[in-house]
Structures are given as structure tokens and as C-alpha cells.
Length: 127
Image (tube, rainbow, N blue to C red; front, side, top):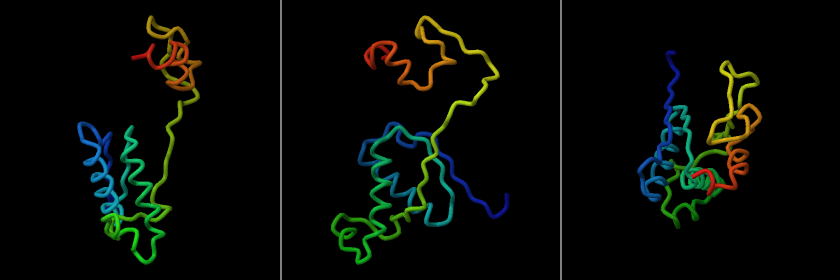
């Protein structure tokens, strides 16, 4: 794949303090601006919020807001740079899914983790 550069990171927030998670988001923005396609999976609200801030700061034409909060122009992202692609369950699973002692709802009918959590009495029943 000559000419194509990709960086794929699974959960870059693991074991990082929220402040460092925001720094990772800013680093990822710089990497994107350098022309490298980045794909991450994350559960971090801090990373998602920071990436959103970097997109919104791209509209700060005079740079006053960026300077006030300590951002560099190289860290901003254009609105088209960030795309959220939700993962969906495939229509047919090659392996049959069956209820377990943990979950009485047949997994083939569960559309999300939330369905399982609700069936178990909310998140307290799952964790």
C-alpha cells in the first residue's frame, strides 16, 4: 500500500490520567494534519471531547480562543477530519450465540450491551 499511511490504535487512553488523554488527542490531531489516517477505538469521554474541541477550534479564525486556552493551530481539525463509525452486529453470525448463566436474554436478540444491562437490572447487575 505505497503512499497510504495508517495508524490504528485500540483504546489509547488505557492507564492514562485524563490530562494525558487530552494530550493524546492533541497528538492524534497533529498526526492527522500530517496526512496520516488515524483510526482509534475508545471509551474515553476525555479523548472524544478533546477531539470535538479541536474541531470546533478550527472555526476560530483570528486564533484568540486558541491562544487563550493554549492550543496551536496545528492541533485543530477540520470538521470533515473526524468521522464516527459505529460498529454494528453482522446480520448473521457464523457462530450461534446462546444464553448463559450471566445473561438470560438470548444474545442473538440483544442489540446492545445496554439490553443485557437492563435485563440484569441496570449496570449494577452487570458489574
